[in-house]
Image (cartoon, rainbow, N blue to C red):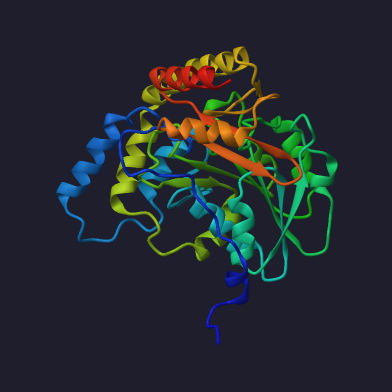
Length: 348
């Protein structure tokens, strides 16, 4: 006799990237920022800890909402915060998609989307990217029971972006809300926040894990029209963001000078990584994120990943059925990228 829901027993579950517990790895596999976060974020967390943690935090993370509203140019009540953007994705799935209904996602993209549908007892439909990583009109096609679509922009693993105009076109055709997952958008030149005011079906999620170097903090948020935020708030945990994360996230998003400087360093290193890989014969997709997607015409991806790991360099090997496999390499420091490229040069 099993006490578990059939959907849970049947699913494989999401597998995060490797997280070695020793410091002797060059870690280029989970798109973490290679540099320390804003000192203002650290100070804010420490000050909050010293002042005491006996009281509950603000249930809507109001200090962050107010400051983020200033940075993004939207009203504060258009923002809902979460325990990382994965929490936001979970809240959205639970809000819009019921058991047996459909969630749509592009393929290949973030594999967690499919897991969220499975947990909900819902079904997911994958619409393949075109070979140039664009999306056809079939992504917006109507179907009975379609309740939500996810669209990562920039996409993972490719790092590619769809123009905001194309996303608005797809959203207006879709018979359901479209959540644009902008986890990596600070490394791109375009974003979709302005589209939220133009289309009430568009939601835009963000995270502080990547461009703000706060992956260990777990803080994300979504921008949507107030009626949508009101319904999402009913589904979130009552205190889904703790006092330390609210304080640090608020200070981090206020420090736009730090973000701009950090972004410039990562974009410069990304250019070096792309050039180095192409010099070694890799096919590299032009990236708008803090990682690159690469394949080699003469070297299988899996052995490359394994040989890098033998020398304690971690990249992400990813294999998509019907599409192919490759290496997703996060942008590290210049020294880390130099070490990775040198080792690949020895292998290939």
